[in-house]
Image (cartoon, rainbow over all chains, first blue to last red):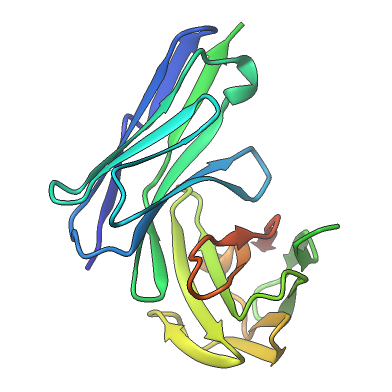
Length: 110
Length: 112
Protein backbone atom coordinates (compact mmCIF):
# COMPACT_ATOMS: atom_id res chain seq x y z
CA UNK A 1 0.00 0.00 0.00
CA UNK A 2 1.38 3.37 -1.03
CA UNK A 3 2.05 5.83 1.78
CA UNK A 4 2.87 9.47 1.10
CA UNK A 5 4.46 11.69 3.74
CA UNK A 6 4.99 15.43 3.61
CA UNK A 7 7.40 17.30 5.82
CA UNK A 8 7.08 19.80 7.37
CA UNK A 9 3.36 19.90 8.16
CA UNK A 10 3.49 23.70 8.41
CA UNK A 11 5.93 26.39 7.38
CA UNK A 12 6.00 30.15 8.00
CA UNK A 13 8.48 32.35 6.15
CA UNK A 14 8.96 36.08 5.47
CA UNK A 15 8.18 37.35 2.01
CA UNK A 16 11.01 36.89 -0.46
CA UNK A 17 12.42 33.74 1.09
CA UNK A 18 12.63 30.54 -0.96
CA UNK A 19 10.36 27.66 0.04
CA UNK A 20 11.35 23.99 0.10
CA UNK A 21 8.60 21.42 0.54
CA UNK A 22 9.36 17.72 0.83
CA UNK A 23 7.38 14.65 -0.16
CA UNK A 24 8.31 11.00 0.26
CA UNK A 25 6.53 7.83 -0.89
CA UNK A 26 7.02 4.18 -0.02
CA UNK A 27 6.40 2.39 -3.33
CA UNK A 28 8.57 3.59 -6.22
CA UNK A 29 6.38 1.88 -8.87
CA UNK A 30 4.55 5.06 -9.80
CA UNK A 31 3.34 6.53 -13.08
CA UNK A 32 3.78 10.13 -12.03
CA UNK A 33 3.81 12.57 -9.13
CA UNK A 34 1.69 15.68 -8.94
CA UNK A 35 1.87 18.78 -6.75
CA UNK A 36 -1.37 20.57 -5.93
CA UNK A 37 -2.28 23.78 -4.16
CA UNK A 38 -5.36 24.02 -1.95
CA UNK A 39 -6.70 27.34 -0.66
CA UNK A 40 -8.98 27.34 2.42
CA UNK A 41 -12.49 26.22 1.51
CA UNK A 42 -11.51 25.65 -2.10
CA UNK A 43 -10.70 22.77 -4.39
CA UNK A 44 -7.30 21.64 -5.57
CA UNK A 45 -5.31 23.32 -8.31
CA UNK A 46 -2.70 21.29 -10.13
CA UNK A 47 0.71 23.01 -10.08
CA UNK A 48 3.15 20.56 -11.62
CA UNK A 49 3.08 16.98 -12.84
CA UNK A 50 6.27 14.95 -13.19
CA UNK A 51 6.14 11.72 -15.18
CA UNK A 52 8.04 8.78 -13.70
CA UNK A 53 10.69 9.05 -16.44
CA UNK A 54 11.38 12.73 -15.68
CA UNK A 55 13.63 14.23 -13.03
CA UNK A 56 12.08 17.68 -12.76
CA UNK A 57 9.46 20.11 -13.99
CA UNK A 58 9.42 23.91 -13.89
CA UNK A 59 6.67 26.48 -14.11
CA UNK A 60 7.51 30.10 -13.39
CA UNK A 61 8.81 30.36 -9.81
CA UNK A 62 7.99 26.69 -9.15
CA UNK A 63 10.36 23.79 -9.64
CA UNK A 64 9.67 20.20 -8.66
CA UNK A 65 12.20 17.39 -8.64
CA UNK A 66 11.61 13.65 -8.55
CA UNK A 67 13.94 10.91 -7.39
CA UNK A 68 11.86 7.82 -7.98
CA UNK A 69 14.43 5.32 -6.75
CA UNK A 70 14.64 6.96 -3.33
CA UNK A 71 10.93 7.78 -3.23
CA UNK A 72 11.32 11.54 -2.90
CA UNK A 73 10.13 14.75 -4.47
CA UNK A 74 10.84 18.35 -3.58
CA UNK A 75 8.86 21.43 -4.52
CA UNK A 76 10.83 24.68 -4.62
CA UNK A 77 9.08 28.03 -4.69
CA UNK A 78 11.42 30.91 -5.38
CA UNK A 79 11.02 34.41 -3.93
CA UNK A 80 7.84 33.62 -1.98
CA UNK A 81 4.93 36.06 -1.92
CA UNK A 82 1.96 36.39 0.47
CA UNK A 83 -0.23 35.02 -2.34
CA UNK A 84 1.70 31.73 -2.08
CA UNK A 85 0.09 31.10 1.32
CA UNK A 86 -1.89 27.86 0.95
CA UNK A 87 -1.67 24.14 1.62
CA UNK A 88 0.49 22.22 -0.84
CA UNK A 89 -0.34 18.59 -1.48
CA UNK A 90 1.81 15.94 -3.07
CA UNK A 91 0.14 12.96 -4.80
CA UNK A 92 1.57 9.89 -6.52
CA UNK A 93 -0.24 7.89 -9.14
CA UNK A 94 -0.12 4.12 -9.38
CA UNK A 95 -2.65 2.19 -11.48
CA UNK A 96 -5.76 4.36 -11.62
CA UNK A 97 -5.60 6.25 -8.38
CA UNK A 98 -3.78 9.09 -6.67
CA UNK A 99 -2.45 8.66 -3.15
CA UNK A 100 -2.12 11.96 -1.31
CA UNK A 101 0.09 13.25 1.45
CA UNK A 102 -1.43 15.25 4.32
CA UNK A 103 -0.02 18.49 2.93
CA UNK A 104 2.26 21.30 4.02
CA UNK A 105 0.50 24.50 5.09
CA UNK A 106 2.56 27.51 4.05
CA UNK A 107 2.23 31.03 5.43
CA UNK A 108 4.21 33.81 3.79
CA UNK A 109 4.42 36.88 6.02
CA UNK A 110 4.41 40.31 4.37
CA UNK B 1 -16.48 28.26 -17.64
CA UNK B 2 -16.21 25.87 -14.71
CA UNK B 3 -14.36 22.71 -15.70
CA UNK B 4 -15.53 20.46 -12.85
CA UNK B 5 -18.58 21.55 -10.90
CA UNK B 6 -20.30 20.09 -7.86
CA UNK B 7 -23.66 20.74 -6.25
CA UNK B 8 -24.45 21.55 -3.58
CA UNK B 9 -21.46 23.37 -2.12
CA UNK B 10 -22.75 22.91 1.43
CA UNK B 11 -25.02 20.19 2.74
CA UNK B 12 -26.28 20.02 6.32
CA UNK B 13 -28.51 17.10 7.23
CA UNK B 14 -29.64 14.85 10.05
CA UNK B 15 -28.33 11.39 10.84
CA UNK B 16 -30.21 8.66 9.03
CA UNK B 17 -31.13 10.77 6.00
CA UNK B 18 -30.27 9.91 2.39
CA UNK B 19 -28.54 12.56 0.27
CA UNK B 20 -26.91 12.98 -3.13
CA UNK B 21 -24.04 15.10 -4.41
CA UNK B 22 -23.81 15.83 -8.11
CA UNK B 23 -20.69 16.28 -10.22
CA UNK B 24 -20.32 17.39 -13.82
CA UNK B 25 -17.25 17.96 -15.97
CA UNK B 26 -17.16 19.76 -19.31
CA UNK B 27 -13.58 18.79 -20.19
CA UNK B 28 -14.49 15.75 -22.27
CA UNK B 29 -12.57 13.49 -19.87
CA UNK B 30 -13.29 9.77 -19.74
CA UNK B 31 -12.45 9.15 -16.08
CA UNK B 32 -14.08 10.65 -12.99
CA UNK B 33 -13.36 10.26 -9.28
CA UNK B 34 -14.77 10.87 -5.84
CA UNK B 35 -12.48 11.74 -2.95
CA UNK B 36 -13.18 12.30 0.73
CA UNK B 37 -11.18 14.85 2.76
CA UNK B 38 -11.58 14.34 6.47
CA UNK B 39 -11.09 16.79 9.34
CA UNK B 40 -7.34 16.10 9.31
CA UNK B 41 -7.25 17.20 5.66
CA UNK B 42 -6.29 13.77 4.34
CA UNK B 43 -7.65 13.18 0.83
CA UNK B 44 -8.59 9.59 0.04
CA UNK B 45 -9.94 8.09 -3.15
CA UNK B 46 -13.39 6.55 -2.83
CA UNK B 47 -14.42 5.66 -6.37
CA UNK B 48 -13.23 5.97 -9.93
CA UNK B 49 -15.27 5.56 -13.10
CA UNK B 50 -13.84 5.16 -16.60
CA UNK B 51 -16.32 5.49 -19.47
CA UNK B 52 -19.20 4.90 -17.07
CA UNK B 53 -17.66 1.75 -15.62
CA UNK B 54 -16.49 1.41 -12.03
CA UNK B 55 -12.73 0.76 -11.92
CA UNK B 56 -11.83 1.64 -8.34
CA UNK B 57 -13.91 1.01 -5.26
CA UNK B 58 -11.83 1.56 -2.17
CA UNK B 59 -12.93 0.35 1.24
CA UNK B 60 -16.04 2.45 1.44
CA UNK B 61 -19.27 1.45 3.25
CA UNK B 62 -21.90 0.21 0.84
CA UNK B 63 -24.11 3.08 2.02
CA UNK B 64 -22.13 5.07 -0.56
CA UNK B 65 -23.15 4.41 -4.14
CA UNK B 66 -21.77 6.25 -7.17
CA UNK B 67 -23.90 6.61 -10.26
CA UNK B 68 -22.61 7.63 -13.68
CA UNK B 69 -25.46 8.37 -16.11
CA UNK B 70 -22.95 9.44 -18.77
CA UNK B 71 -19.25 10.24 -19.17
CA UNK B 72 -19.70 13.84 -18.03
CA UNK B 73 -21.50 13.08 -14.76
CA UNK B 74 -20.66 11.12 -11.63
CA UNK B 75 -23.09 11.48 -8.74
CA UNK B 76 -22.59 10.22 -5.20
CA UNK B 77 -25.55 8.92 -3.26
CA UNK B 78 -25.25 8.30 0.48
CA UNK B 79 -27.82 6.29 2.44
CA UNK B 80 -28.43 6.37 6.18
CA UNK B 81 -25.97 9.18 6.88
CA UNK B 82 -23.78 8.88 9.98
CA UNK B 83 -21.87 11.48 11.99
CA UNK B 84 -18.58 10.10 10.64
CA UNK B 85 -19.64 10.92 7.09
CA UNK B 86 -19.08 14.61 7.82
CA UNK B 87 -16.27 15.70 5.52
CA UNK B 88 -15.54 17.56 2.32
CA UNK B 89 -16.19 15.47 -0.79
CA UNK B 90 -14.31 16.30 -3.97
CA UNK B 91 -15.08 15.22 -7.47
CA UNK B 92 -12.28 15.11 -10.06
CA UNK B 93 -11.78 14.12 -13.67
CA UNK B 94 -8.93 13.23 -16.00
CA UNK B 95 -8.31 11.98 -19.48
CA UNK B 96 -6.65 8.60 -19.36
CA UNK B 97 -3.13 9.00 -20.70
CA UNK B 98 -2.50 12.59 -19.59
CA UNK B 99 -2.95 11.76 -15.90
CA UNK B 100 -3.50 15.34 -14.69
CA UNK B 101 -6.58 15.37 -12.50
CA UNK B 102 -8.83 18.41 -12.31
CA UNK B 103 -10.79 18.91 -9.11
CA UNK B 104 -14.15 20.43 -8.35
CA UNK B 105 -14.61 22.99 -5.55
CA UNK B 106 -15.81 20.41 -3.04
CA UNK B 107 -19.03 19.76 -1.12
CA UNK B 108 -18.89 20.24 2.63
CA UNK B 109 -21.22 17.67 4.21
CA UNK B 110 -22.21 18.12 7.86
CA UNK B 111 -24.23 15.40 9.54
CA UNK B 112 -25.94 16.45 12.78
